[in-house]
Length: 117
Length: 163
Image (tube, rainbow over all chains, first blue to last red; front, side):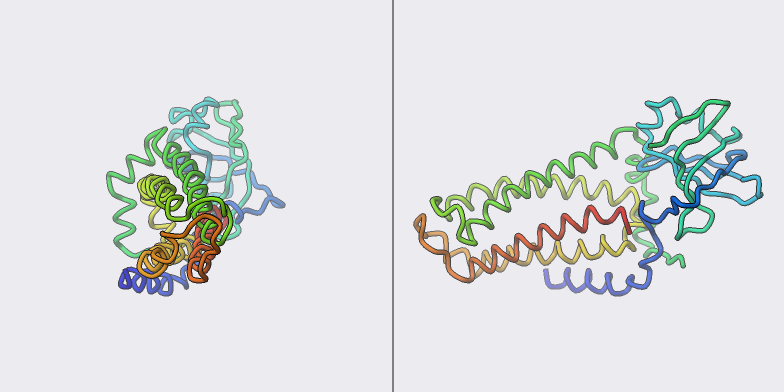
């Protein structure tokens, strides 16, 4: 027990400097929304949130965070829709922590718009 | 500033177990809902025990109340361990460097240690107590600490999403 505490405590101390490595839902800049439009380069249709990489018109490669897969499927945005090679337009909020990452409020594929919230 | 997670947590996230949880449409939501429902049951049982140690619910026999509520808490805790392991594995490399997850882990161990200390030094002091008799100070301390630590564990758990 004591050893467990000691190792957990040292883990916490060691990784203390890494506190900024991840971020939660609070770290998006809702005051400055962006639209990323372009081809889907990769697609992870996975929980807790599906993610895409998209080459934007600024030729930056964005990581686009979507929604839980069950919600997306229910709304018709299944893995055939957010598939590699499709063109997507994602409106959302850029991360204040992670470079070139954004959380999509809604996406449009093949002329159809899907809400992510 | 990106920091690398320790290799063992990267390996856990890349394991078939973790991938299965991410790729399934229902496993992750099931674990998430199960974790919260078990927390509600756990919190109820823990609160009843801790309030009794603090001197509330005075009409009850403390030994019997703890003896019964404890099994509810243990069962709910077991469900939280399983569902929590699933949620953690799916995103292990991110979660392990999350400050709220780290604080939660430390508080969790402290809460378990508090139970162990109560078993060793506190329990005998209340087991034979009649209803309405005031609980001894060490029982009050154990109950107060327990309530504070488990509520903090829950608060940290929910806060992981915002850090």
